[in-house]
Image (cartoon, rainbow, N blue to C red; front, side, top):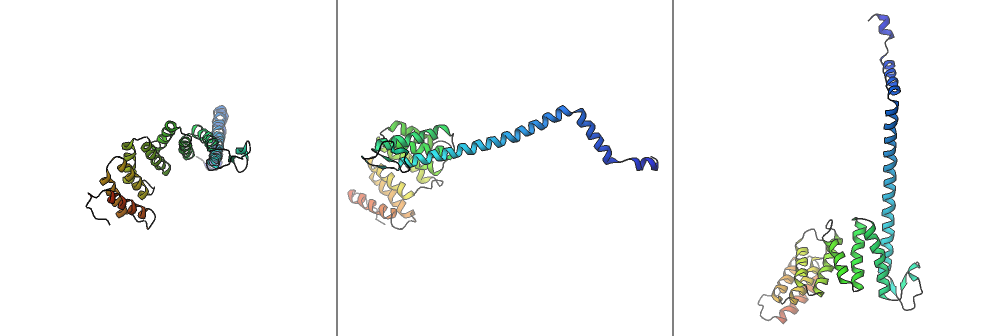
Length: 250
């Protein structure tokens, strides 16, 4: 190239010209690509807003169910008191039916998230209060053995164990409690679970095994007073009722 040609050559200018030519020849494709990108951005933003809105609605409806679940009962409660700022119901049946409606709506309408799982747990509790044991068991089992193993799931297993025991299905109750006591992920109070398990074992006629469970729980317990005291008291009571045992009391 001559000196004049070298001076005349401008790489930036050449690239701009090439880009302009490319844009002119591919205008339709570029416009479509830009439209797709904008649609994706807007769609993502709308989706996030909808998810946030659904989560907020779920929280609000669950809170309403909890208000009903814990509401007071008075025979003098006015009509439509469930719409008041502080709900009051004429009977326990009305209270738990109102709570169950709210929990059911959250459980059925908001997937498998934490709020829906908690709603299904409290729906099961409400159904137990209403005497609908089979429906309650179904909901509690879905929480216990469904997605994840959160505190809510373990709480559902604890309630299920008591419900199975009421139905005289002691082996199911026993299996649940023993599994939770051994499970390091279970964050419920192990001393309380051991007390519940000992009651199941006594109902099965396994008094010696019940004493063993209580002894092991008291030896492993880090609690002072409270449940530890209950463990020792219950163990002493069982030992007195079972003089055949020769194991020393701690």
